[in-house]
Image (tube, rainbow, N blue to C red):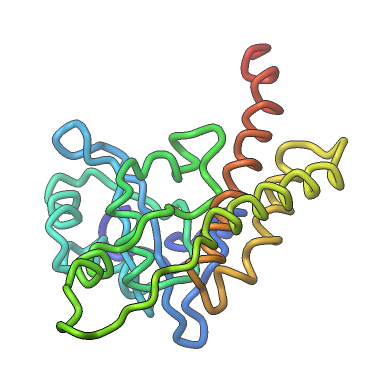
Length: 216
């Protein structure tokens, strides 16, 4: 994508483009850079309340993001591959987790469905601040492991209910199953549950698609 793009080209309607900025909601977006910068920078992740305007700014080299300015200068081109409901915290989770190619359908036959299970850096920094002397801080309950176990159990039940479905059908159904949670109020317990659910589904999808990959 170079120059001033058409909005219809900016946001292609594919199964990976699920979240939009309609109504002013924030979205996190993933861009695939067609000619990686410095041989390794092949993706960019950002967040915005106006997706069309933000992608237009990237295409024009006026977004204030150095990587995308270099993409514009070198006419490397890029295109939108995925969006998620979320804002700066979710964007930071993706950037802290690194390896954005794992989420890119152009780079990975079975891109990840689950969101990165990474605490944003600003939250991690706050957790290291010592409480004032004399302040009693309750110990965290060991619920995240239980939530993850619940997520794995839900995933096994989900796969049993979709026995005989194709990998694409399972993938779409799983995304629809998790979308209400990620579009609403998130919690650490819910993140642990959905991350565990997603990992089981991803493993199952990889197993279903492996024979086809070998045959081709």
